[in-house]
Length: 307
Image (cartoon, rainbow, N blue to C red):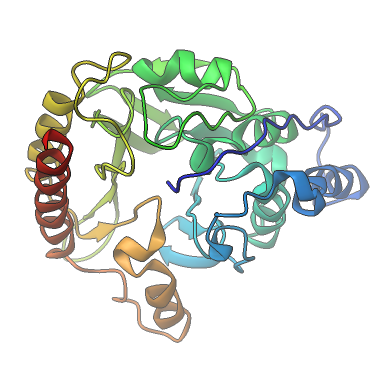
């Protein structure tokens, strides 16, 4: 997150298609409607890193997972036997790009059956409302971010004020250890509160030899402007951060896919993967490194705010 304010945006879209077919005229109209956000100047926060809205062609990661986000904010598509799961919607102005990337990955918008949200901040959740309307997908998110997502008001107190986002109906609020299944694919929710109260890390495994690979989509544990001292809206924030960082340290991950791709060099690894390196994303040492850096950064932020 960066320190600036941004207006709330709501896109009015036609209902999702009821019939079959590939990316036909109706689907193209949905993509066009979603793309309105990309050209609306009021949606662009001047302090947002340019990479957050810079288009990125989709690319395969491993197994059924495809990257469909922008260059600077991740969205992941997981294909299953009965449709697809989308993780995060990124910025509102990225919704059209994500829709086009889904089509480029060989799926119709209505094939997306579930949208999983990592946390209720505008840079990851603002595009979810439009994508839900375009796909008809059910939205699943951490139970403690339920109200924030449905009101479009982020939780807690920060040093950059309140950045609202389009509210979205959450079809299921999920708790630590609960699972989401589509076809034969199951993801497990691990509560990692702190960055937001409902921040949710998603885990799954994919078939591989000689053994299945563990995949972790970690929710952020960065402080990123959160008020750690005297946070009246989130008084337990420090304890939550500590528990979440500790819990992430217990997870095993062969592949780490964060919401901000630079944390795991996702774009660079994607280029290697497209060039034929099928092991580009395999890095069992990566999650421990991320957790260690997060712990150091959190301790430094807490000490600074305490002063």
